[in-house]
Length: 358
Ligand SMILES: Cc1ncc(C[n+]2csc(CCOP(=O)(O)OP(=O)(O)O)c2C)c(N)n1
Ligand SMILES: [Mg+2]
Image (cartoon, rainbow, N blue to C red; front, side):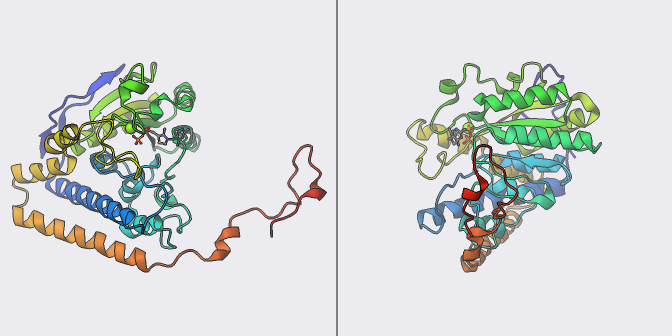
């Protein structure tokens, strides 16, 4: 079936793709199922954080689900993805399990990073997911490097590096863009514009918040990031562009986050409650998929309820399994550390004065 996306794409130095998206009944139902599960998982994480079962940093993704859900319909697991600290649902999109996310959040051994990374450090090498990154913008040169590897190895794949509107002002993005454009690297620089950084509205941090044009000499595309079908169409188009040797592309996903920046931010001091509830009512990505199902008679209301019930069960089960998962053993404190100092030379330091830790 073909569905027209309501919001036109906007192109910079490029002719945008068609608004008519090829899809199927199964694809729409799968996207709804996945988006609903992501939403439940983030709500569960919120509750567990407040109950002190999750400690430290925690950045939730609810509101932005359509970006990952749509993106994954146009990529394969041979393509590479790297993102910021807002990474729980990106891990799920790459095929990671709810248990891997939940256990990592709680610092348990069944977590994606074996419980030593926490919320910001999901990672799944077997699906080319190069993780969450705590340093704003640090994932953009990593993305350029992943694109370089594809080109060097003559692999027909693309690297997607996801960054926020706040990160769009970071210097290393422009360094990475320059070299990716100069060397025609297959990289999608994907700005998830949720309109706020850490309590800072885009207008207060950017002279030009028109992020799809910020690559200057690099083509760009603006996309309704609340519409999973539009995201799928855009990423399919961008991947074709990158893999055909035309170099990188900048993509701006117009999206929104419902929660505060992180758990320490109530998210309501720099924006109004009306703004948040307005987005929920008019643009919610999960509800949009539900509406598509109903409008096209793909399922009836009872069948949708059944899917929701099953996804809630999956998340609840992951929470219970994560709680039962042990903390990492104390030997891990010195694991993955280089304790062989013999061969390390530090200029100006006498190696005899080094005292190995273990
Ligand atoms: C280099 C660096 N500077 C500052 C911070 C603190 N910090 C963490 S997230 C953030 C805001 C980023 O906002 P944005 O890129 O829009 O991403 P979002 O959180 O909205 O997904 C800041 C300033 C950091 N982690 N790294
Ligand atoms: Mg932001």
